[in-house]
Image (cartoon, helix red, strand yellow):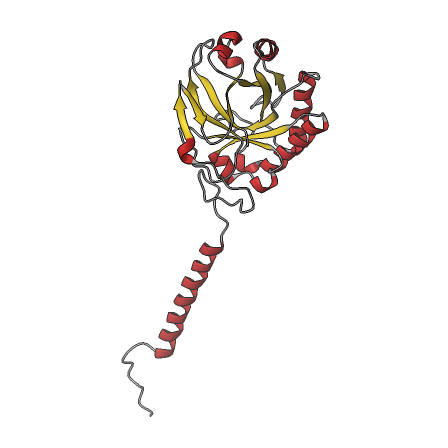
Length: 272
């Protein structure tokens, strides 16, 4: 009878196979991590490689008499308002040094998706025009598709009814918390909607623009596709750090201006 070999330890071949298998699992996992699409989170790394860069001189932004100014180029001081500001004494606003106003012309409801005219739009339009301010308007969008964005643009232009504007008609899409029919900002083709709105506005003879904050500018909008439109950035503070070019800066939502009760958004339009 042949004598059985006594096992003194694990089979070296099996050990080697197990070791190589573990290495393979680690390599595959690492590759998957590196190749995965980046999450679109607030202040994510910028991806708009072909968008124009922010070339403003940071030292040229200064506060003067309660308003942010830009000393390196011509500029205008402005506000944006809606029905939330209530009745406005527009002559007092103009006398305080405000040169332009961007008025909310309308909005889409966040729950049912219906379209509305801003309740104070017509009175704000007449009052600001009589006070000699330069004017633009914005539409607060909750569009889910480019078709809905175009519908919003058509309403905005219809409400303007041929009114001459010195500033653009802006597309303003913002996520609304609670009770919204929008699943998430990431579920909306944001850039396509903005372009559809702007193109519809331009067909009516108006200049078009897009409003956004840093998070949307970095994470949801393809800024390289929006370079033909006026860009209105919301970044609160005295010196904007946003990487890409913008034309108008909303730098606070808690400003105070004579003629308006309570807080109001303040804006700086840089002319260059």
